[in-house]
Length: 343
Image 1 (cartoon, rainbow, N blue to C red):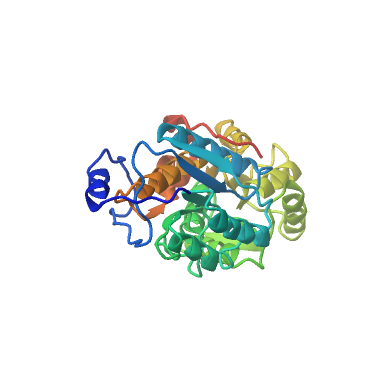
Image 2: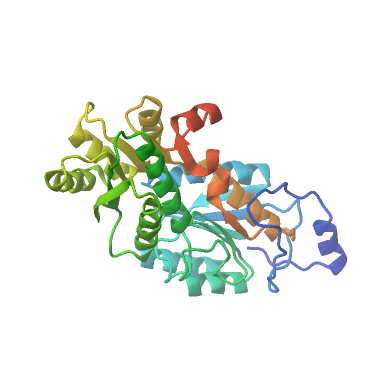
């Protein structure tokens, strides 16, 4: 990062320059950082994307949006790979502060607690920080930044869980009879984020007395773990009508059930194969996360703030997805949604 010395008049001219047209669920709020001096519009900036992992297709889809926004806003974008290692990611942030390699950090946190301190050190050092997708902080029910002076554009596990629960209710509406048996394949029981999502799913399902939650078991985030979890569920509950879980786990569960099972599957994730499964009727619905749009928006916000503009600092990514993330066949068809990643 280059050291900048600008007069108040120059900074004011940046504030009055061309601003991004930003949309989100919360009103614009001024950046309250006091340590960062604004870059001019003609100064090329550096964006570091601290994604989950380069091998992760979800993160790669996000990076495509980041690259597009960077090119359109006079910036370079670099993928900083932590390979899902939380402590490596913490050290990478610390190294970025020391090297001043990036004007903007867009981060997908591998640990919602360990990154609080290093990211606050980054904002104090004059780096614009954008927390993307994963909440950083102890609260899972707010989009407000929990890192001082950061921008938060995240997918809340609580609203995600509520949406999954609503899709479950919608699926049960199509099940004949007075009872609809639902199985929920949780992510990892040891993760607070997954527990917050699970509780939201259960609370939503409980609003309809027709719904009978027959199982809530750890399904993980792979087809193999989902396959094993669903086999156990089926042995104890052979008459399951609806199954909800991470899309990777649902892929495994659907393979166990077979094409003629009649079970309504709901996946949490919108890879290309997940979208195809809904469109061809194999699955009932998915929760849609538009990773390309999220990466693009995060980068636009970060670069605008780095250039002294007022930007929104709290955005629920659900609002950027088609039909607020409710990926039914009709919603995906009408929106012509195109996934940017593969499982």
